[in-house]
Image (cartoon, rainbow over all chains, first blue to last red; front, top):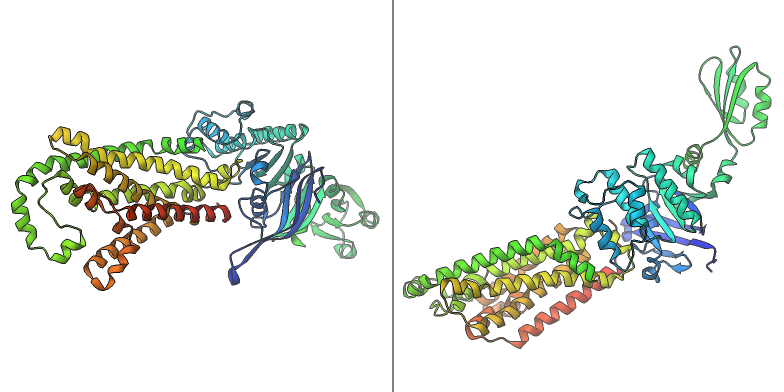
Length: 298
Length: 267
């Protein structure tokens, strides 16, 4: 059953490509949901199944098994109705090369859609829509892709690598636009390789690996994971054999400097370290990137 | 739907104008040549007498007297020139409609819009059909200004019948090409499939007219039903040909829509 407060509900989604012995499992029995009004990050390496999942959500490709519900509607059966409320940005923005930005906006908004906030987006992204697509830089193509995805003020925004090819200033503008859309009630689902941006703007993330979901958690709960990096500097040379028994992997920098990657409680490690002549110690929580790598290494 | 149809017309504007001018010049050239051919009809008849009968049958040439421009156009224009120009145009149009959009990735914009896939297919189909209509109209009725310039008489009814027959033939080829465009994800594959299909059909039609044993194979060729000879020489048409073309259009379009509705679109 679909909960009214869920913008996205994916149940046991499976997608195979090909037939017989050549069959490739792209997505394998993944399930997760996204509450309305959230920015949700979808992480994974190239070929992990992110784009396949997004294409199933957009009904470009049909799932082998499982169901997808967006805004309470079946993504396949109610696809046409649903697309009035969905904005989509492809991971690889390709345009009609002989059409200008304006012509793209006119053409696509005339197909049962609208361009409600196109002018606002053009201004915010500092985009010149009078230039033919074939003369646009990759950054400007991305801007136009974002305008086309958001111009009808959708309730659900599905973005595949939204800040590809954008400079840091424009990335920030896009983050602001997405945050504003969220505050207006929209739900944003975005895949990304940029873990810093996910950490910065997403409320929750899912991590997909080889077609299977390995984690779905809020950013806050990921941050609470007991993963730490401890940098210790000692006042004299240490016999590093002592550290082998610690509940941490250690990376020896030189005679007096060691970096510990701690998985689990940090207190025992600190207790053990206090027995040595510590000169300085620096502790920080693992970044999303380190957590992501941890999931991938496991 | 109208937005997609208008977009296709706008995109193909230059191609339509170029084809239109090209076809008019070709017709003008044939109309200009016609009085000379008429004057030398006897010599020409003696010349073609040495050709093998099978060769004449194969290319549907049974009369070199050319007492009307329609007979001359039947041999010189509609036997091979017009079908080749039409097939090139039509294959390009159909390949661009869906397969190239998939190849380029732009199909995702259309699929992300609230429009059923069958409507998308039909809109693309109608846009291309409009271009084919303009091409056929210009390529057939160029005879009107060309005849006026060269002071040649033509038969209105024959031209009108050949226009409708040509239009149906072109739409049948287009429907088949659109079906391939819905099946394949690359324009090149559509062109390849169409080239092979059309060459096989052409060869079948010729072979069937030469070798009696395989006479029935002619029914598998679109070219058999494109009876421009009867249209131009007798201002007549066989209703069966029209029904066959109509059937091909309906069946190919139905298969194309069915396939496009169900296929995965991965760009």
